Length: 336
Image (cartoon, rainbow, N blue to C red):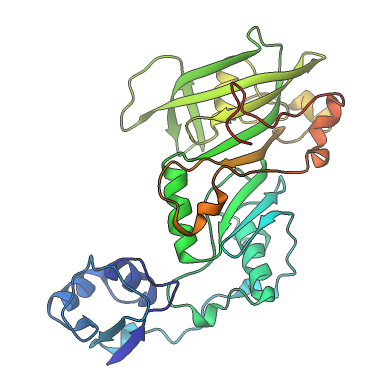
């Protein structure tokens, strides 16, 4: 018999969800059977898979030792010398300005050392805020993602409660996301809301957009607000707000109306852009605003706060040296 004590980062989740992370080699079918037949108990009593764990609860597991792995977790990040551009940090979250060219998570290339999450884990480990040997089910995690070649703010949660709350806020669109980008062409409307319908092609790793359609399982509505900030040499600098959050939304949506991003070879032709020194899309998630409408628990202090990257570091802004970068949304002010 093994006994596990629920710590702070284990609390607040369902019993079955915790077990899938804490006892990775236990088949799900056997896990549910063991809960039903009282071979897995909570506080020495029969429980239910949906039971919400509390800090201090104890789990008694009368299951074979073969399901408990003695293998050390993969802690390759410990050897990383972390390199992060931190926009904001407190005891619960970390906002990082991800550089273009870095992936947020390990991809098919298998280079786990050059991922944003690995650098964040290494940073928190060196600060003494994360010890994988003491965690049963939690690891620092990202709450949003951006493409490899898109720069900008990514949110990381330092503890399980912050992760649950932030994931809910992202899902409920209570976090406003603003982007700067450079597009080909001059826009007839200097500010507008674009509405389109997208279909994702996983094989090609791209999306296709049309101006009419019927949302369903394979077709999703895409809503993008933009405002033109400056124009020069058939290029336009835009401030964009994502109303929906779809794959490649800004890149695909603007290309679908005839304005592909500077340097974007997937949704445009960037042969000439490369000659100008732009080998990937001129796009940055430069500002976040926390606009909570529901209960935000331990993160309530973030409500109505906004955070912005140092835009002087964006190479594509050198094309528009006199542009004024806004601190409000493309259509109306939403945050202080």
